[in-house]
Amino acid sequence: MRATLTRPGLCRVEQIMGTTITLDLADDLPPATLRELADEVFAWMHEVDGRFSTYKPDSEVCRFDRGEVLLSEASADLRYVLETCADLWGATDGFFDAYATGRLDPSGYVKGWAAQVASDRLVAAGAVNHCVNAGGDVRVRGLSPSGEPWRIGIRHPWDAMAACLVLSGTDLAVATSGVYERGRHVLDPRRGAPASGLRSVTVVGTDLGLADAYATAALAMGTPGLNWLARLNDHTHAAITDNARQHHSVDLPLTD
Amino acid sequence: MRRALLAITGLAASTTALVVFKGSPGTSQVAQNLPTAQPVNPSGPGTEPGAPGTDPAAGTPTPSGSAKPSTSPKPGKTTARPSGTRTTKAPSAPRTTTKAPQSTTRRVTGNGFENEYGYVQVQIVVSGSRIVEAVALSLPSGGESDIHSGDVRLAYDGTGAPGTPSEVVRKQNANLNTVSGATETSNSYKQSLRSAIEQAF
Image 1 (cartoon, rainbow over the protein chains, first blue to last red):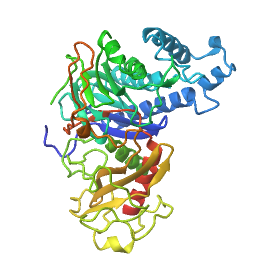
Image 2: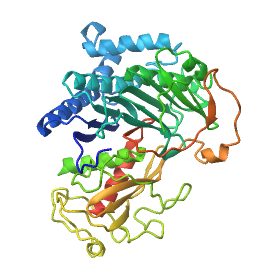
Image 3: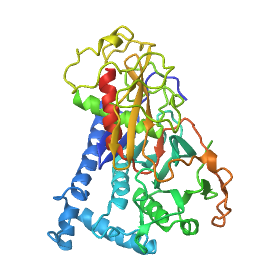
Image 4: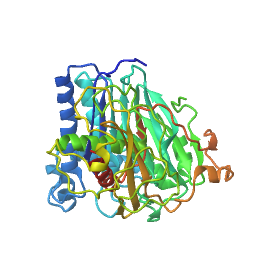
């Protein structure tokens, strides 16, 4: 760790999409450039919130859901999100269901996807060392401000102030779904009842939207989700059961 | 100024998730260099939070902002002094100063807020003019709010997917850049934190 008084880069936090979005730019770029990059990231997140929020009656998602916008008239982003949600419904045996609540709600994919797009744009703009945290869904790239790989804690499901596992990496998408923050809000779409058995599921991959959707689907499956996670290609996972047991892939990028 | 307050609010909110930034405490930017610190929840889990604005647990170094209930903020006024009890303990330094922070540490408890999931109350620890820690005295939990991992250490049921070794969930408090967790119910936390910040500065 460098013992300098100031670290390179910039850190900014905003409340968007009903949660906290944190951007940590670790590149040693001119302050004006960093501010511009951060402005673009948060402008994008606000744009996504305005278009995809299910709480805003005039959002594109709500207008589409009410039939005021046809699929052929929808934006390229909305069509992409709807297609991906349909693919995810198939890939998760129906457990990731953007219509689980009876109306269109792609939020389980949109938050991670929006952060992933923001991260991809930062890389394209030359800011290759950064961390985007959208309400607990994390995309890290390159190195942290200390010059080491990013260290990502997985929140302890019974203690908001503690982590139960620590991951480390230079190119990771880490998404966690849990029942501890909003109660048992994830429904098993087949039974229409709250899922049970798992308290928290973390999926690690390289696409944050997919990782988020897979984590939500496994949580909805309950205990059988452990087997489903074990068969998931190109992703690793950690899951904590209601009785405080922890299961994780052998190749999860754990660190001390 | 409002933006700055929001930024501080958001930053501290993210520290619920134990974001511990690397760096030394000598810099001017609150948002970037929180000293590595253990959580300083004085009441521990399971303690009933006090009524809004009451003094937090005994044994804290200085009185908290219990003297005066929070009034509506005036973010534009940088010259506004905090209530008289604190000005003697911690002379308010300009927030933009690059001088070394005061060594005085204060704990200020925000008002409690009820939401549909439970009761939220936040306490901040202020060193000089910097927030060094934000602690949730009370957060909502699910129906299993009484369960702590230590209590269920013996509850191993042996079920698990093949190839996924099972172990008792443990706590790790390492030097973290960020934390992955379920989406927070951030609104009540934000309100309580905001009231703590308004009392502190």
